[in-house]
Amino acid sequence: MNSPTLRAVVIGESLKEGSLPAAFDGMEIRRYPSRLGEQTEIEIIELTVPAEQAAALALELSAVLKPRFFYAHLLDEQRMLVVFPRTVVEIPRGDAGAVAYASTVGSLFRIPDEQMRFAAMWDTDHPDAPAQPEAGPR
Image (cartoon, rainbow, N blue to C red; front, side, top):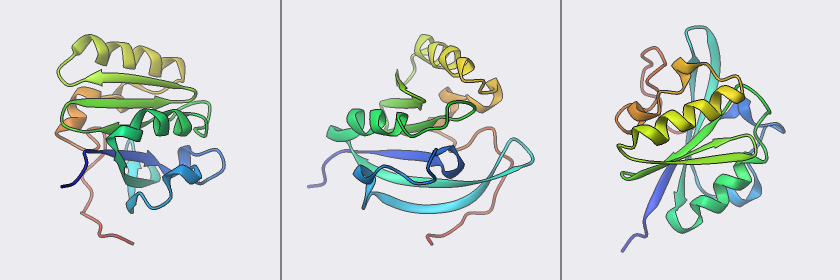
């Protein structure tokens, strides 16, 4: 039986040193190009994180994010952990107050509102991105 996992999504350019913490070794699923807004090319890193390690790994990730403009997130069907620099916010699915709180926290890091459509992320990977062709694993 498989243990529960969360799917993590990290923007490669958000990492201060350009790489994930060693604790994420072996968890990466794939990397693919995307766009931030309409013009900025970025690389998306997807990982599978064991549920029992999600909170600790989110904190590790928060320590390596650039201090402005970026966040990462981990999610399953019931909750999302939004990882900001040195901060993690939990959003239970359907909790509009938690979504608003996460957006308020994100604004402290100068993240544009249109890039923080957290409520839509359960159904759409990157609700703010233009349509991209599906990329396979590298």
